[in-house]
Length: 278
Image 1 (spheres, rainbow, N blue to C red):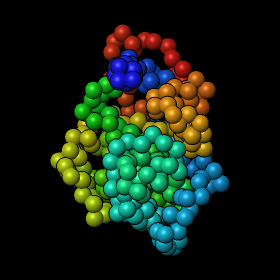
Image 2 (tube, rainbow, N blue to C red; image 1 turned 90 degrees about the vertical axis):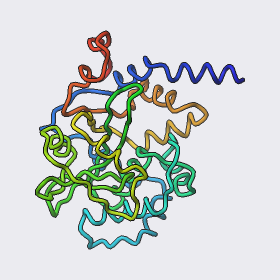
Image 3 (cartoon, one colour; image 1 turned 90 degrees about the horizontal axis):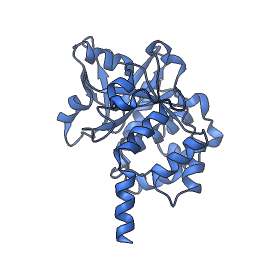
């Protein structure tokens, strides 16, 4: 049993698996088309959301008259006040929420995904983003969100896991594309904490959000599909579940809108390989 577990770990962590996963999930996009990509609300409906989310949402006591950004921040404050965080979960959305509220885990991607669902329930347009510096053995991989404010008529990047918003030199809130474009231009970006939570290592913020970081938008994430695969194949590790979703053509996509991810992230011998979705 111990040998089998060791072999399984070696195989599932092999660098080629990381690269081929990105080859199958990723595509290059264009920043000027970003308005039409990745909105969680466009492909998910309230009736597909587990009832537990509506129960928790009622306990937030959100004022329906509240400005959209403030409503999103209240959701973020509730999550940071009630979720301790911990290991990555890789479970269905209902199980993820339960484990997080029980203090049994939750990394940045778990925060981002359940935040998307609470935004959907409250009619807030929301997207999920990721960012990396490498595909294998990188210094970090991180997830954050972006919500649309009809009052301000703009998308606003929001990091629920770290409880921050992003401002430029004019103290204007930045969208995800504006955030990384500003960083790459060498212009200052300030971090605004919106809850009582402060990351244990705030100095890492400038490391994760830097001019060298590659952001990508998560597109075609269907919560009901992800729940189906997670529940049906819950005995298998997440990499197997993701593989089955890809084989079934039910997978989400990583859309790199500021970079050619093949050139920036793949070894030269893999850059010309054909793959699904590009």
